Length: 277
Figure (tube, rainbow, N blue to C red):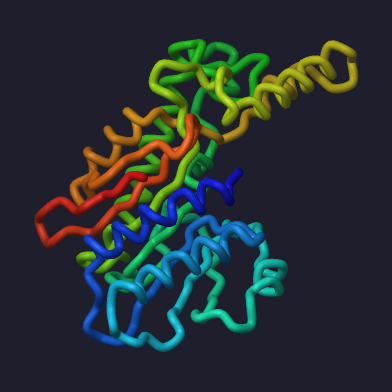
């Protein structure tokens, strides 16, 4: 399914790069893939970007530096073994959280993040407290059926997105672009009614059944929460518009559950250009 989304977004990326990306005068063009996967999908996405840049400009870039970011506990061994030998880019692994600064200031021309920002930096506060309005008994994720729980998840997601955008604002050059693909929930639907949250709903149900059978402790089930939040399109629009460094250029639905967003860094003291696809 992710490959289908990448292919569907290709034409939009080509259009955005052609119309909005400012090509640097020096022969260096840097790409960062934040939260990259280890399979062929991440290779396809990077190739789409490189081909689009080469269509836009007659400048012949040498091998393009491509910076691949994954969380601290993950490794790059499998990913590097699958890199094609004829690739048009250098690949470098970067460990760390993309909710923090990862790269030197004003060094990135294009940032890609596919199916990653829905994973928050931590479990929201209050989910493990039986006396809290956010106590998530019998669930493993945000079902939005209780007000306090939904507010706790959104508050954490809002802080994380603010950190993500502010960090990228320092790293992306003026006129650079950023594409974010994230599973979204339709504005008028609960997460449990969408395919994006179906696996989490099944997981929670299985854990509750195991607790009822005495196979695991019920308290441990209540303490287990996945730091995963599926925003609505309205929420994504709100959070990006709140940021003073990026603005929305374009937003489109590729299917009923997923929306990519593309962002361009603006001029000093002005908003940037954010493309949602």
